[in-house]
Length: 264
Image (cartoon, rainbow, N blue to C red; front, side):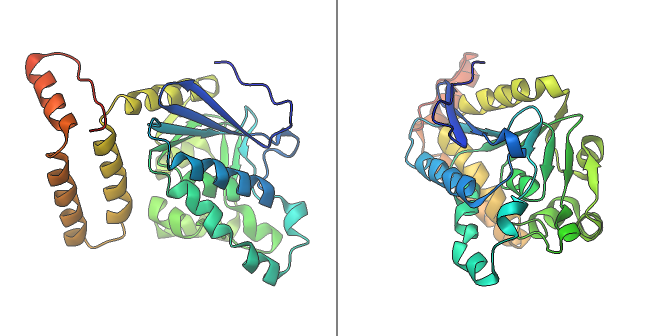
């Protein structure tokens, strides 16, 4: 895959390697893709634009071979007051990623620490290289996770593992992270983007309305009661029976041919 050149020094690169797939690449290699306010704002702009992209089917969010994102930019945060932090309203910036209407695959090599791990947890699928390092080390600099590191993490790995990671700030390896349930696919470092593209390519061929409903029901249902979540699931399934893609998919199955989904 060819990476587009970056003559303007953009801190976020956008690539469209195949129809229906976008790659969003963090590009601050000199600071291991540390997340300052500027890169968060740019990420939000990019992901907000995806909302109206009718041709988009899946997004891959990645960094470089050495770092996905090594956390917040401490040089930036060390100068910020409490009131300034409040007025930044970074939750709105993060929300652009978690609210992306199509699945987002995090392709992770190297470090995914602090805000970097939180960024990965805003995604829907994580593909991680075997030598990657993950953690929530904020406590070691006198603060705590503030973009879902306590709440998303506990939902992913459970109370006791989340407590240990957040209270000690320990950095864990990819094997341990996989065993905890933080990783969708654990692969060799050189295969991270290949696997992410394979997953994205598979999703891109699926019926778009069904994909959107699956994502919506899983995200909204996991914090609801089981009864409520099952009701959401039933209603979403019933909606899909009104789509042309449902008819196409079942006809193709019966005729033993590949379906062609149009999002209708």
